[in-house]
Length: 98
Image (cartoon, rainbow, N blue to C red):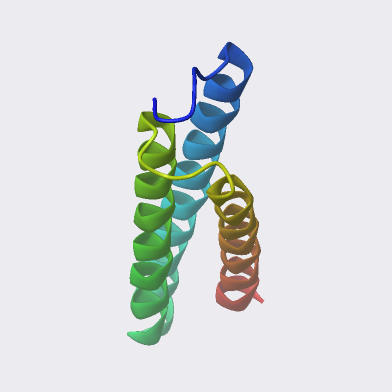
């Protein structure tokens, strides 16, 4: 890595964050497809696509950070983006089913 070694704790946190983001985004995409079939609205699918694109960006940034291609202060931006994606998925699921 570019800025020294990464501890086991940081690797665990990054892998957990990736798994969490992938899980909630896949759940939201699945919910958007199910909701779109029941309501006939294509906008639900579009929102699911947007969530999946944000999640792919997050996973890519985490991978670049782990490889050392990003400076250490990007870690806070990665956490903020993960939090924003989580809120987006919660809001989208509430929109689909309420």
